[in-house]
Image 1 (cartoon, one colour):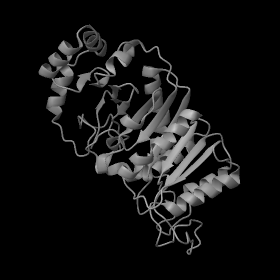
Image 2 (tube, rainbow, N blue to C red; image 1 turned 45 degrees about the vertical axis):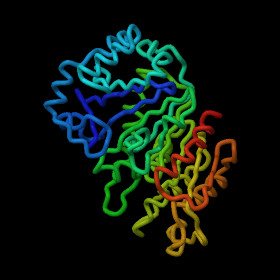
Image 3 (tube, one colour; image 1 turned 90 degrees about the vertical axis):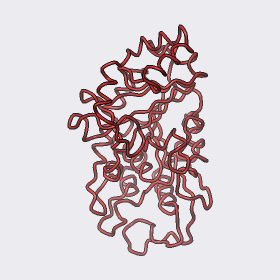
Length: 341
């Protein structure tokens, strides 16, 4: 499990880079019900709780460490490296330092004065910034434009399927509503406490995370300016043949709303058929990367009154596979559209 909790509160992990990237290691059920169970955001972390408690007992204050870095950056970094290593465990979580970004962000981080233009909540946090992640990860730290704060929220390991689904499927009991509430009612206020109110707020994900991003926007209409789904699993709710409660059906019923939507996929499809008449165009054996479901969602939104290049964007990358490398190659597109709102 990837989780860092203390006093029932998730740690916020400021990453001091020019784009003010954040990582937030979270879990829905375990906070307050288990001891500290992980030190990093990589899947399968099994850090010794005694070691974590020992580190917590000597953790420096965030303000103290930032003051030391401003006064003697090299000396402070060397001292921290000898004392406990990086990232530094501080009272606010984990402090990551980028030497080129330090003068820009660390100088006013503890008394944040700059305006955040855009704030983007991204899911499957383990795969967003780490180049050692699956298929090389998303490399969002390289794709993020200046003025954008990205909050990456780790998945909860064994609960990933439940947390990222909006309805029950394949015997999985959905916890998507609880996860959406966690993002809206816990994570967003925590980030706002540290960084202030942004001008625009969005959420983004791929595959099941594209589904949960759309679900979060659906649960909280008007609270997000943009939602982006890359290769989203938009047929979830009808795949096992036991139901028809897809996000496509929900958006059909909801009609046009204020949140702008970006959709994309790779793959392909010859017929995009709905041979089982469950309302979802997911019965084309030649299709891949959720191509047909994404095109169906695009059509649904156009019928509802969304307009291209105003509050709807769709991109098709012919033949692109369903993996992090493919999403990393085109994630700049929704980020650009987000910044243009």
